[in-house]
Image (cartoon, one colour):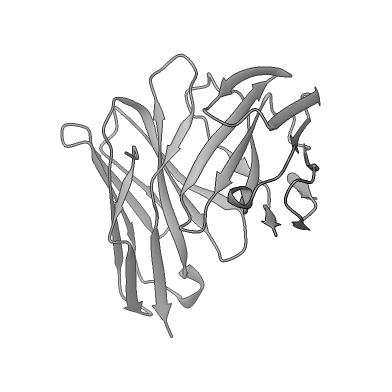
Length: 115
Length: 112
């Protein structure tokens, strides 16, 4: 069984469009994350939710809006897509961000290409 | 600047050799973690070392941590072609909103 799943795996779209990426974890974890990995493989955190509440919101354009309907899901909606949004987006989860050992489990990634 | 910086950026070795990757960071940490990323896949957690630990082993992996130098190293012994991947260190900071800050990664290629 997949622990952290994301859909879609690939997303190709035109500039200016709005798109969503879905993430689900079946590990019973409390905390979920969204990361962006650029073409140089640099991985940067975007958001973090704990039990559906936002705990980390890095300097991300407000075109990006995360939504957590329950603690097993953290979706990412992106408005007015720009060329610079092209990247691989990873969802991750952990048992709880305050735990001593905050090991994270990653999804397979969504490769977003904005044309 | 990034919290974690890996060195080297790329490493190419023969199967059976040992691979050593280094990571430096800037601020206080709770723990430091190493992850592996195979091409086109998500990251996989390898090993975690706490700030009060100096060395940890897991199978063919050995991690060291020197908090005075703010550095860590990952040693993979008897490497295999399947170890070919990118390796990232990630620091878990001491702030109230705990988060992992990833380094830039080392691309390891193990030649058969």
